[in-house]
Length: 256
Ligand SMILES: Nc1ncnc2c1ncn2[C@@H]1O[C@H](COP(=O)(O)OP(=O)(O)O)[C@@H](O)[C@H]1O
Ligand SMILES: [Mg+2]
Image 1 (cartoon, rainbow, N blue to C red):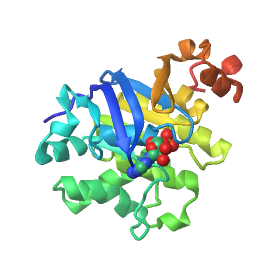
Image 2 (image 1 turned 120 degrees about the vertical axis):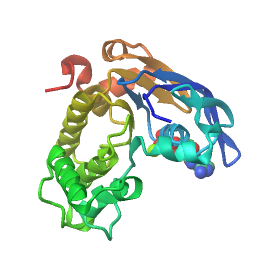
Image 3 (image 1 turned 180 degrees about the horizontal axis):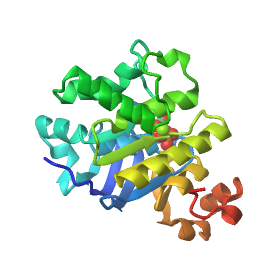
Image 4 (image 1 turned 180 degrees about the vertical axis):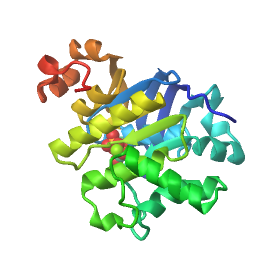
């Protein structure tokens, strides 16, 4: 199945450890659109993403990719669909015993049959794209948090995915590095027009990358709209997010 990149979530309920964690999440992401889900720690963002990639099965409701429910895909279809989705996991999740180059090459070796020369060429292109040119031989342990994140992004994009998912891409980074990663994600998104879903508790990241923002609180979407609509929302959690950063007054498109 060749993905176009439409994501539809209908009344998604998740139950984990005997407790309901998502209470009926519904949303749509059109091909090429970037949606941020903004919410505090523990509200269900990672659990949500795990349903999108088929790592968790809904308790009720469903996630559809191009109209097909993820939890009803046969293993071969799911594998093919996953190879068309790039996931940037929380913390980077690089293989610490593999070099940067081998980390980025990993999906290529797994899903494509390419001559070694071509693999190295693509790895170099991807590292260049994320501003990490020439770092092929370094080990993840030798990198800063921001550099690890860039390598994780290069690895997620190396197969040219139709959907990119970011889980807390700026968590644990200092503010300057976090803003640089925001700019990288916005740049890559402009360049590739890939359907993007980003979950974060960092409002600046949401505003820098997404066209639309959905605000999640305790397993529910409590507000959703364009950046402008979110900026003028009266919802208390949204106000608290806005007031904890300067975005309500100063930030426009976030592409500076
Ligand atoms: N495998 C699990 N078993 C039981 N509870 C879980 C599991 N995974 C997550 N949870 C709970 O679900 C809630 C949402 O978790 P999560 O999606 O990781 O939050 P977030 O990513 O927004 O910080 C939390 O209360 C968490 O403790
Ligand atoms: Mg999480």
